[in-house]
Image (cartoon, rainbow, N blue to C red; front, top):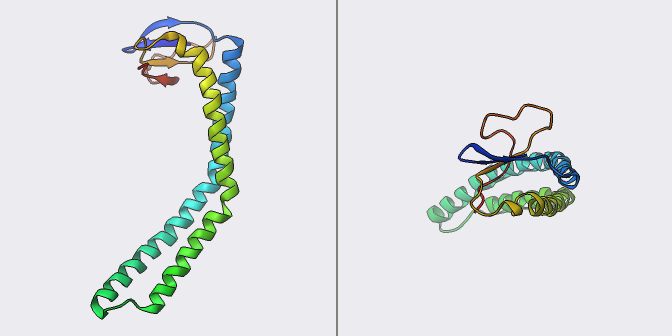
Length: 153
């Protein structure tokens, strides 16, 4: 682990076994988070398609209400149908949303533990970045490479 300020190495040390364990847990949790996001990306695509249609319907309803003194019942029915479809899509993904939320909470908990062990002892204002890299590998020279936490404030 390297501690940097203004892109200059301030200190360097190996992680303790507990820190390594937490860091590895965070990496695995991040991979799991990416897997959990996949179904939600398809949900987003579905919702976007319906949202586009719903926006057009809402615009048509508003324009027609202004021109004719009231909205077209058929357009209102279509609007309700698309709203219901969107609700059904979100409802069908509740398990995915809950899993993603749970994983986010887990990551926050592990990151908090890691921060207590690694970041907190460094003190405020003592670093801009913390870089973690594989022991035995050359230290990265790019300031952005391996950044885990940034800005001690």
